Image (cartoon, rainbow, N blue to C red):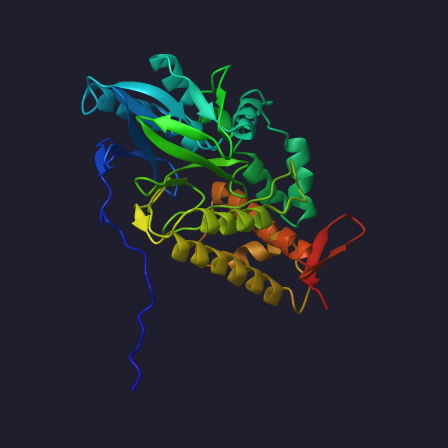
Length: 350
């Protein structure tokens, strides 16, 4: 007689998140502050790490009036009497860097950030208002997005500027292998690509804390996209290699504090789940293209069939499909066919 083995599962020390703007201690010397986002993913987790007589801030929230008001209330209320000591931003996405300029100016904070993330945020800050539609329009059309949908996606305009308050003109670079002393505790800087360029994560071995940013999240897969700026990039391959490196570097028993969702334990299990998720998505794409070659845009409704996508989500979904396609091309799993007008379609390799 065999005893049935139960599948291992993630463990969540906190079953519910704190309300927006109500910091909660999630580990000794670490506060969890939840801020709202105006998207389907409706929140971001900001963390404050005890740093001498104040708090080091890890990520900021999006650069809108509501988030500013919450920060003001938190600083005047729960954090009153304790200063902010420094600002660490993991990557350039607006929900993470959005209030960096505002917080840095208001509280005279130095910004700590990986160089590619800082420079790209700075570049976007000074990009033209159309953010290069001359490159995005042919990019979308080449991969099968029809004219109407293309114009709707592009019609969102320079969303980045509306969601950020800029970054300071100077910063302190953090990179893979650095050790940050925050309040007498040593935090190793780890970096990983795929979701962003060189996203920073912090690991404190002594306290078994891993601030994973968006690289590993408990219940959702972070967006891994290809853009018009680097259309042939193998973003998914970069992301999968990052997950493998994290699995080797960070022990399974840490408390994972991510940019979204609940804190959890079970890092290696979640990494395995994310790798399996992307393998299953690649298999789905290969099967969908088996009978007739398909463009990336044709694959969007097949892979994201469970919901209707708005313009914001369509852009992310398209980029994610192309990330899988480019990875499968690099792995020799797909073959590209190009028509006379430059349109690209894909079929499984023989």
